[in-house]
Amino acid sequence: MKKTVHPRILELIKRYGDYSSTLHHRNAPMPHWYLLSIAVDRQYQGMGFSRKLMDPVMRHFDEHGQSCFLETHNPKNVAFYERYNFKVVELGMLPGSDKTHWAMLRKPQ
Image (tube, rainbow, N blue to C red):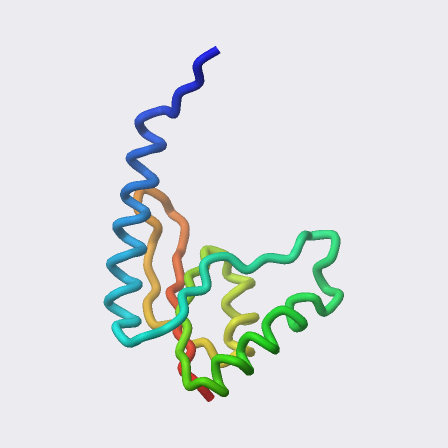
């Protein structure tokens, strides 16, 4: 059976990609790392795994004077990233939705 993707899905993916790329380049024009996906499985959340993942990465960025940029759609994540000195650099809405979108940047400490 041949499977196809609904054209509306492809359009939404393209709109999101264009939106994300524009705000990414507008808010992080300097050399930086782009943190695309950071996650801990639900069953392991609250056990310190996020810290074990983030601490050495942030330390590496600081030691090498490197900035990093990320985006999130989850308001709980904003406070988590702020603990690592990320700052909200742009707040918007995901295209075609009512979902808030945070762009965050962290400069070396």
